[in-house]
Length: 303
Image (cartoon, helix red, strand yellow):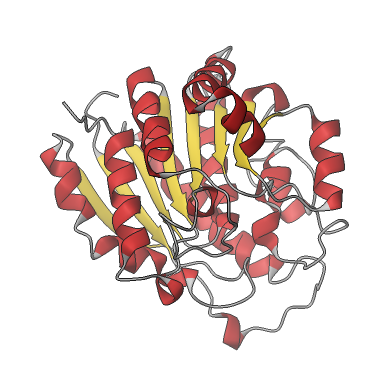
């Protein structure tokens, strides 16, 4: 990736998850001195602070099938505008969450910038979960299980219309690391036509093969791809402090390989890291790991 200015936005969002913890993710990552490390890679860097988010204890959800939908949509709209402004100015957006519902705002901003040029984007969605629920299918009503579906046009209009029209084409989307799906998600994933690489695929074929196929898919017919990285896609051994940990995930080196391959492609147009929860972490291990993954995605090499 060219040495564009990296603009970081914290999004202390926990409304999509249902309980506190991940709202402290941006602070936990900032404590690692990520900005200074990015500057040492040769990038200009600016921390643009946090996007305002309502506090759940001050709210009453009126829609139990999509809890706190209004405040989540409001925050995502603010994030969308900030990400679009970064890209319009020629900068690179780095978003740190917060629960994964924030991806709706990040992707909306990227889509608006590139659609103004009649260009489409790809998305690599790294996650233990599909995030393909809708208000009709979700067992919990938690919106952090709905963002990818929303970006593909399924779900609440407040979210699906965040960019004015359907944000993503299914042929441009790849899921990596999946190992826990709800029944409704399985059905929608099959119907949607997106590409999915589960942990079974990674075990069988290896991360190098999976990532090569993923990058080819998301860069075919697109201007480049956004990487939406949920830390729970990694195994709890290496990332214990996440919103919804699931055993049997991607290991330390496989995670870094993904980021190194992304950097080598030169096609990443946005990056977000989500679901860091310092409340259940050990010595800020997950935030420190997040920092190292971001650096690998921005081009840090072993040699």
